[in-house]
Length: 409
Image 1 (spheres, helix red, strand yellow):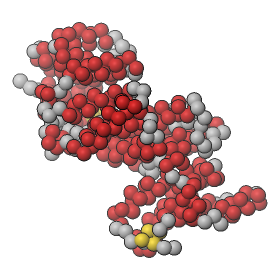
Image 2 (cartoon, helix red, strand yellow; image 1 turned 180 degrees about the vertical axis):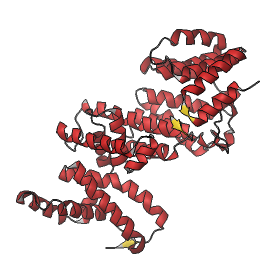
Image 3 (cartoon, one colour; image 1 turned 120 degrees about the vertical axis):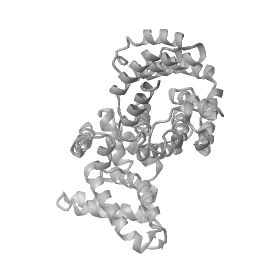
């Protein structure tokens, strides 16, 4: 084995990148998701133990596939002779061939398998983070504030459902592939949003989740570079994450967009995101992720909050409401209405929108109403709504921010 020297800190990201490729190769070869994942985990542990001292192999993916295959075969010694012959033949496969069997195509196929339509969104998210993202059960459980056993059961049931469905490790045919890709993007979007603004807990950000979502979306974009919605989603993530350094103060307190120090924004991420969404809008059919990315780009390119082109943002929210309507789209559009036409007009539209069952009782409805009342000069009513919103969110930074707005004289 020819090895290369490398610093230990580079080992973890390398193994995280290789893990889904190796798992994809194993699932393609042996089909048994559970047994293949166990074998890959053992191979990763072996690499973590051996590579720091021996050096990283010149063909690290091939090394992992070979070791994982051995572990899989060792666990299957009592199976039928035909199966054993096939497995032994696989062991003789040269390492160089193993590298050809993995890669971005297989990683995408693995994502599509994890987002099988038989699974619920929470199961798709958990399985994708485990199988493709390389996160452990405990890490996923901490991210969503549920017990380890809940995530473990969710992942186990997801694998059983995939097996029972008879799904094969291959690219699904159209139009099933299109539907599965929508699910993949939805999962990645969900993971990023949870990392960007955690729905509960003491911190506003879960950087591990948002970073992982960006990494996985880059992989999908590398495979489907002409897909406008994949590019749009990656752009949206980059343009949103670019503002992260300015979204909280030293004490973790939430800082609204209007008060952020824009010098802290990640200009390289903004440039990349703007380039991605600009190219996508020029070359592909318009989709909701592209529109959201375009809105984020307008915010990010404004030198000051006062320079924000709210009229263009309102146009984009109206377009988004036509192609992908939803309660949060409605609330964001109403905020844009306030910035263009004034708080009174926005409050009238909010009164019409609050009958939506998806918005009734949601803390963001109260938060938007409080903001609009404050803009309209009705400070007493705004304080009441800020307190109502603060009681409705499980995010401690959001609670503190809303309570601070209510406490203003």
